[in-house]
Image (cartoon, rainbow, N blue to C red; front, top):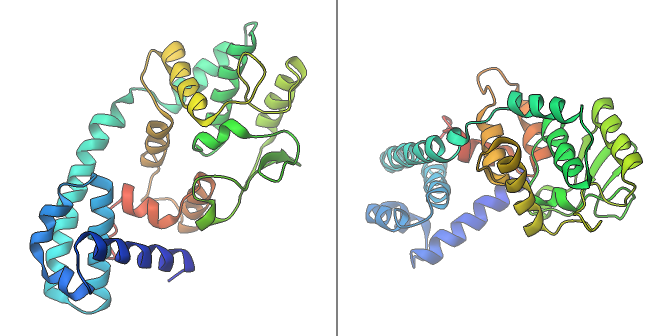
Length: 267
């Protein structure tokens, strides 16, 4: 088990013991009524905790209990699948839609606001989708989040404490787009508001939603798009190494992918 996975496992066990007022995990896995407590939680948190109980039962050879908690895990996964169908798949927009709109915008004159929307589409096309930290990408090395030597380097993001830095290679196409944008609108940050200042996280979130509403008349959030992107992966054909790279560049672990987007059969 990796250090990251071990840290997550220990963290989740501590949380479960606390919320169930239990002193040990044997009591927890034997108390089947705590499923009622999990049912009152956020569906993703409940899924994480039930997964933890499955792993504990498996690792300790508690076969009957493992079977019970695995069945509860499957039920929880069905709830999550319904959520995705209603909230994620129904965004009614695809990567091809974004590419088509990007090509359309490339043919017209763009003021600073439209230029930022155009650049955002380019980033969605060429990069693995990031969280709101994309708002603070500097164009010089600030030891936080910046572009240098055709690489996006992120040291400061939501889960950097667990997963270290992100280094994503920027291909020639996106670098041409960025350099052209900087020539038209010189600046120190990749994305800026109409006043020439970098976005805060909250402002970037609103900017993201506004972009999709204006260009596509769709209600899409940063998180919606990350989930849609992840769910669009062909898990039957992608190599494990490639999936790890996708997860790393999105700022989470392979375990998060398997926990939230695909039922882990190895449980």
